[in-house]
Image (cartoon, rainbow over all chains, first blue to last red):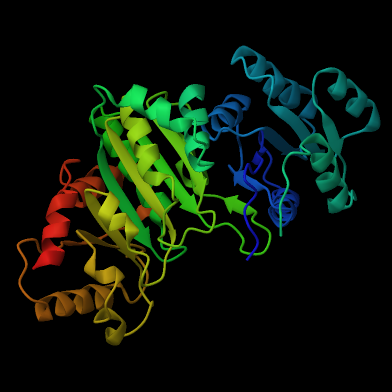
Length: 140
Length: 246
């Protein structure tokens, strides 16, 4: 029986805005689960305030946002701003979805740590998290 | 709120530093009323909890939820998905929802649940609602921790032999027969009643409450009232222990 990491990284995963396409986010959530993370899935149609509130209550170190509706330039920075307002900028925000390259650069400037677009191998997301949180060590 | 969330994390990690914190908090802390919801996966526990939150909030109580889901025995990872059903309470400052991985603990709750309840009491929450992992027949820990244990059943989970088996059906203070809009619900109620008629007489006969948790708002009040009798716990942990002595 594999042991849960002594300090498992907790990741709140959410769909923000009016976007019902949750297949991708569920695939990613499952991959993170299989990588040993505790994934708190909060479901569809979240506002930035709801996402941040959930991350604070859950004491998550990471927020993963998924969006396919095109509203990423509004909603992703809104989550970052809400974290600032709640004095919780230590929480890392990453995102995924159909996001043009130009927007990715702009979002990173606005404080989103990383963006993964369709076709990204799941392992790439896991590797990125591992690099970011090396202390999360699962000892099988 | 972040302090509370962090403290629960420390308890979950069994961090030695939490002892001091608890000692500091214990003085003057009241103990909240604790209701526990247990039952098989997918029976509607989270959705029922959502309705009960609404009811308790209407009464003016602050409510904290500790919702447990399992961790993988292979990777240690988990999908904690209970709060999805409770999102309408998301921005209510008097509602605190925390998902907990069972992290290999087998009783249906997290090893940290009891201590987390104490922390919630210290932070002033009036009522705590526990939700177990989706359980089978022998995860009974919730009954020892909660004042009121609600066992959630649905139609089509088995025949009358299942009903006379020992274990989870013995710990109910209340039975919720959820999804009562689908075929077979009347049979579940009838079999539960028969099962209870065969049992030795006890001072408390658990009511059987048909529920359709997804109906939401209009059902909330009646449903929660029948489940929790105005939010007052049915019995104390001592009374439960008394029962096992007899």
